[in-house]
Image (tube, rainbow, N blue to C red; front, side):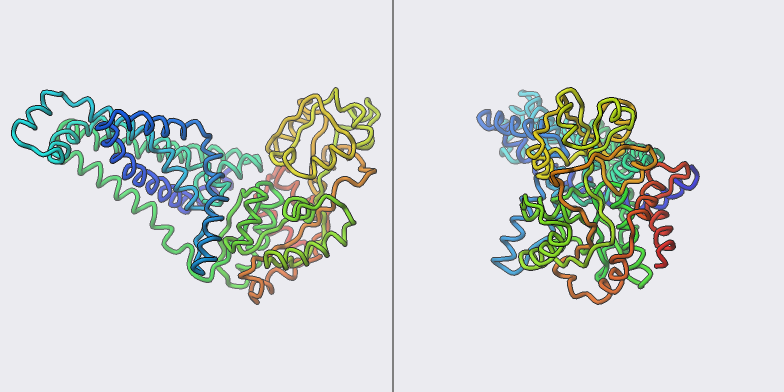
Length: 516
């Protein structure tokens, strides 16, 4: 417990700094856009409804979906800009998060702004007109000062919403306090989960209280209170951003990872190899499969581990299965030709999708293969990870065996295994290099029709780093050196062992075991 808490505290300066930078930027941008719109809406009844309805519509979109939707859009715009001007921009991480959170912050500012201005006493407006004020003077000297407390109440609400939603920016590559929560849920590190929630809540409370001081100053017409609140916000933001000063320096490498334990371990393993060579390393973790590959091809991450079957079906859109070596050979040639991506080689083990069941349930139903499973599937519940049911591999298996389950449910991988052990799922789409299969004595169903493609774990290098001697020298010794038994043991040490190693500790142990 103490070690996990110490690890959480060690990460806090970086995670908090990025979270504050993202939230503050989105809130400032949201205020800058929303206040003029609120003024326009208060002046024009015909404009008021579409503006407020549009902001309300954005709020109905789940914030995680809004964050995810911006990435492919920005990536396409960046590619177009690069083709036209030879200059693109980073579409992963900060920018999609900023745009999505800005939109998410606008509704309370718009509503309160319009309501505050419309709520100014008509007699006061008439008096302002009577003394000869222009509409502009009336707005800035009368209406906005009187509406300021109502507007600030909307800003406070927007700040709390934005700080909370910013924890969901992790899957699009933006470091935030959400890194604690996503990694903690996957590795069952509840200290990280609680720490991330507590830090986010504390940040929201502090921001709300300081903005409340500004609101109180506006209500009492106290310049001192207003300045005190603004000064507190400025000092807090400045202190939070200090740890970021040394990050992102030129020459640093960015290592990506998807959202499960094996990916965290392998990303740490690669990072440790680079750090041992004197390089500076950043991590972009909890990425979805499509996001990770697109980010690599665009040069926004420099290296990560993917799986040949995932690339074969999702990237190349292939549905055939010519065999393990032909898949790897063709994949290597095609990714290089198409995207300039270097497949450095296989790490030496395969992490394939595998349908598994509890031994007692499999024995009772006489199921040993996916063909047997198809017979009983209409009466069973399938549990999968968050991606599997939307992937081409599932469609291929479903088509090959005519699988039709009574119920299909998606889980984060950790909870998928718990659903199987607890009986909420009869069969799950597990991973062949997962140590929990052997630890729980689960039955792996055979695939007699070969519908599931091979899944060699391969190191991918971005086009801009394909000839980087330092990177290649650090990562080449890993190729072909990790047997599946070693990977299972490392995964189990993070997922299930009582000692509950961190991914970094598991990576260090794996590196020592392999003599690296």
